[in-house]
Image (tube, rainbow, N blue to C red; front, side):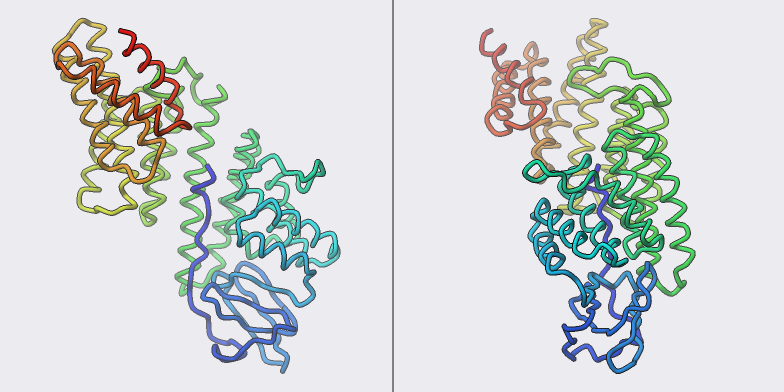
Length: 425
């Protein structure tokens, strides 16, 4: 869930009212407000630090005011050296070490309000990036309980924190990853209210900030859909799970998840990468629910849209659509086969095979998706041995590719079993 939940904080230029010119060198002995574009301004005192503005008074008494969505870092003059080290480790993506140094920094500055807010944010973000949703320890000594706990402390220290738009999205994800679904849903409702208030507080001409708020709302819709899927997996959703259909789908997520994903897709219309994630969610939910005709219709609609929008970033979505279509055709073929309708079954197996082969033609760096397409293409070839003389050989080739090239794939064991069976026959 997480990978896709990170908020883009924007690269907007500095606002009016900055104390010194952009080409002046800031005084690093003072507090520095560093923007995403790399420019910085120094202030003697911070007078405001929230999700709207970072403001202060310069050394000469002039006022400084920088919109928060343009700010990358606020480097307080009295920061402990451990805090600076933590930022270095974070930027190196050494998240365990970053968490350790954020903790050390907080221990050195326990009464500094900014440190409680910033260090807990750093801790939570490091754990989130590492996927350590139940906490992390070093040499057997706990560093932090969980990112959810850290994020909660940030908002306790400053309910209007500059980090709120990001935390609002991540907090329910963290709780869901811990398996605390009731708490995740409560956090989701709270986050939605927080983002509404944040958006209401923004000036109407703050286009970048408004877009940030709308993106947060879109990501929260995705989180709601994922929580609905988790509910179904746990047997506490809108319907009880039924046994998985081997190799085709997952335990049905139920109608609620499908509708949540469709709602998310509508909210994500202005954010292509989020739209792709939610469109994939719709497909996954329909396949899980065994709504084959609906899945085929969804896949066709996605492929039609992407036909006029060719790009590398759309390749994974196109591949997912082809794989979903293939799974739907394959399930229909199995149904025909059970009814002894051999001609219809063969036609459906062929449709499924071409869908999986088309997925292989559009996959872009997604090993799991590629392995899945190879595995199911092999299944389809195997089912067509009675009508195509070389189908058995091609099936073995597809499974061998999975075994040899994708050792970590979820379908590797199935491919190995099918390959062994085929070679024994």
